[in-house]
Image 1 (cartoon, rainbow, N blue to C red):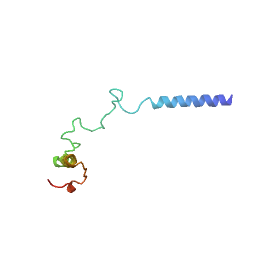
Image 2 (cartoon, rainbow, N blue to C red):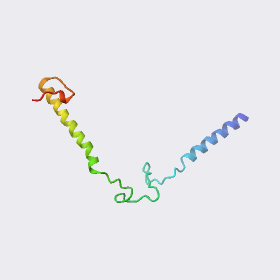
Image 3 (spheres, rainbow, N blue to C red):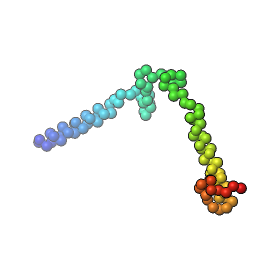
Image 4 (cartoon, rainbow, N blue to C red):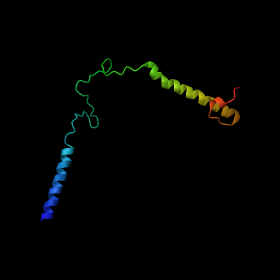
Length: 97
């Protein structure tokens, strides 16, 4: 009888914790999975506010410059490989034409 009472109370405790965990998570969801909400005081429009990152165009351009340099080096490697059949990784070691 005592074992049955312990098992029943454990089952009730388990069911109560499942119900409490799925009841409210502190957000107001517009749709299932769409639960983002701004903190109080966060502006509706970020542009022009103190949260606007204002990225420097020169900093943003660094990656595109490095990618174009990489593509130029790869083009030299491929051209040398097509001409000689030998792949040379270091572009400086490719003989000038």
